[in-house]
Amino acid sequence: MQNYTLSHIAELLGAELQGDGALEITKIATLANARSGHIAFLANSKYRTQLETTQASAVILSEADAPYFNGAKIIVGNPYVSYAKLAQFMDTTPQSAQQGIHASATIHPSATVSASAAIGANAVIEAGAVIGDNAQIGPNSFIGERVKIGSGTKLWPSVTIYHDVEIGADCLFQANTVVGSDGFGYANERGQWVKIPQLGSVIIGDKVEVGASTTIDRGALDNTIIHSNVIIDNQCQIAHNVEVNSGTAIAGCTVLAGSVTIGKNCQIGGMTAINGHMSVCDGVIITGMSMVTKSITEPGIYSSGMPHTTNKEWRKSIAHLRNLSDMKARLKALEALAKS
Image (cartoon, rainbow, N blue to C red; front, side, top):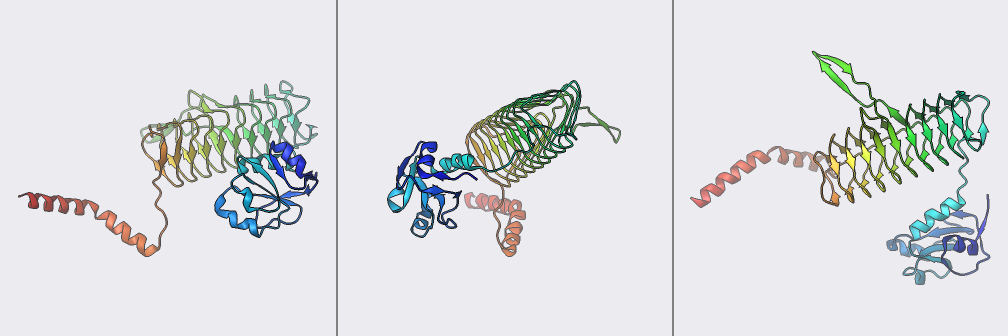
């Protein structure tokens, strides 16, 4: 693992250095757990008191927090973003597949695989697929017919990409993700379910990251579309004909039902469910465990999940909720009596 000097780190981050630039840094750590040779960061001033006790050799912090730390420091505009960038520089995560084609991989003769791509053990690449420069296809992954995968995109093991899906450059798909599976489309004929073939596809832009075991269904007729610079967490369900616009983040276990449209730069908390055919405008934040049953047309923060409480208090609240209609009727009767 490569060690970095503080002066090198300051140069990488384009930041101001105060302290010994020759100091060697071996690891990024939290303020509470840092040791000698580590660099920590302070992204939230409410943890400023930890600067007094941290054993970190250096700290990344803002100009406002800099006077509260007497050791070596790197002063930046946004400590959290700078931490993220430094973590990228110091990342030791291996490739999902070594460059070249593993002997056990199966590649159709009509597929096009860049000479700089890496194809892992037991991967399958079907007819007409195109794998771009420096792409990584992890072991046991399946790439269907006519799939296009852009340069620098990385698939971890056992990712499944169905036919005709298009994926842009510099994307990341964690293990067991499925893209392009059938949407939930059926017609009912006298009690018998008649399957509707899903004839659309999935189009994914550049720099999209998708978590482990997430499913993105193909469109019924039109395409499911994930625009560039979208991040989707683990175990999410993105149904057919959904469109997620750029800059949006979706946390784990969220479900977007069919034909939902999410605007730009939205943040959707974990375990949120959005009903089919709803639209959410740009700049919306939805807190975790919310249920969206109508479209959101104004930017802002929206919530519907009930915060936890003791079982006794919860039972009392539910009892009151069940009596709301009766209480409303009684209130109306009292108001009518008061006016008479």
